[in-house]
Length: 96
Image 1 (cartoon, helix red, strand yellow):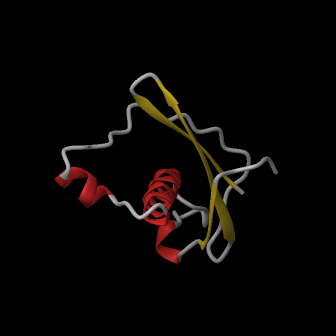
Image 2 (tube, rainbow, N blue to C red; image 1 turned 90 degrees about the vertical axis):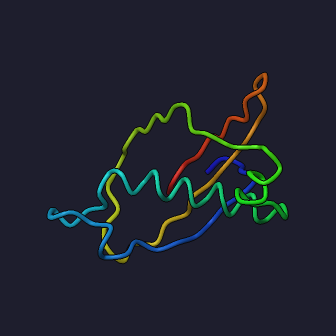
Image 3 (tube, rainbow, N blue to C red; image 1 turned 90 degrees about the horizontal axis):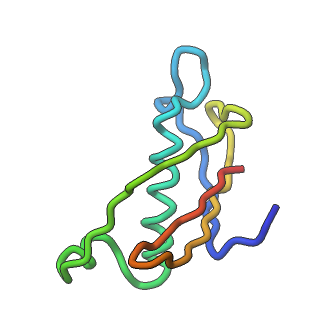
């Protein structure tokens, strides 16, 4: 596993799975968004406070490459790196 500036351990909940018994693909974006929010909280910041200051974050692009599916009860680690690219803050995220 490569180095990350933030990691969050979590567990798959039953309601996040589809009829095939695997995590519905949209939930991976929820996992990544939750990780970004927790990362900001770890820095003493949050999206609500940022909005009040006139700073709003938006997702402009998401690219996901699936290797294997998570199932109900699986634990996972959601990992994050961030860097500036011009005016954008780019998040690179992996889920293991």
